[in-house]
Image (cartoon, rainbow, N blue to C red; front, side, top):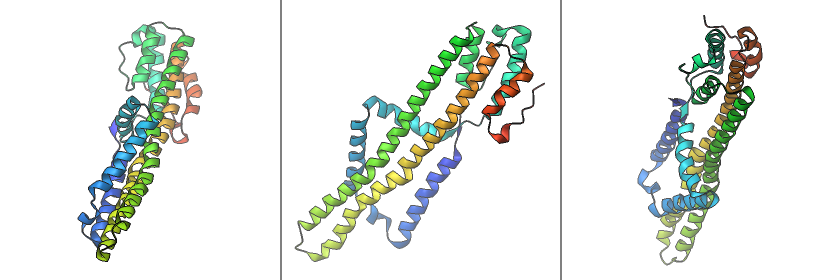
Length: 256
C-alpha cells in the first residue's frame, strides 16, 4: 500500500482554503468556541456509538482512515501477467513449486498457498469467495460509520445553535451582547457542516468507491487462482482474464 497523495492534498487544500477565507475577513480566534465544538463532537460520537457496536466504531475508524488515505499502485493487468508467469512455472514444475513465490497481494498469496497445498478448485473458490465477502463487510462498516458521522454532525451543529439562541434570548437585558452571542450560537452549525462536508462524507464516498474497485480486483484474483489450479493454457488465460480489465489495460504482454 502507498499513501494516496490526492486524498491528502484534497483535505489539506480544503482546510487551507477555509482557513484563509476566514482569516481574510476577521481574526481566526472569533471562530473558536470550545463549548460549541464539544456539543458537535460529543453529540456526533455519541450518536455514532448508539448506531454501531462500540467495537465496530473503534475498529472501523482507523481502518477506514487507512483505506481512505492509502492506495494500491499495482494494476489489475499486473496480476494477469503474474498469473501467466505462475501458470507456466506450475505446468513445468508442479503446483507445490509456487509456494515460495513472492506475490504483492495477501489475498493472492493465500490463493497460491491453497493451490500449493493441493486443494481442489471448488474448495479454493469457496474459501476465497468467503474471504471477499468478509472483506467487503468490514469495509462497508467503515464507510457506514463515516456516513453516520456526516449525517449526525450538522444536526448537532443545529442543536448547538439552538442552545446558544436559548441562552442568548434568556438574557436580553444588554442589547450590545446580542450580536456576539448570536455569532457564537452560529459557530456550532459551522463546525457541524465542516465536519460533515469536508471530512466525513468525502471519506465515506472514497471508501465506497474503493470497495467497488477492490471487489472487482478480488474477483479477478479469484479467477486467476482458479485458472492456476487448473493449470490453464497461458495463451487461453489472456482471453479468460482480459474481460475483467478496464479498457485501457486490455493489452497484456506475456513475461518472458
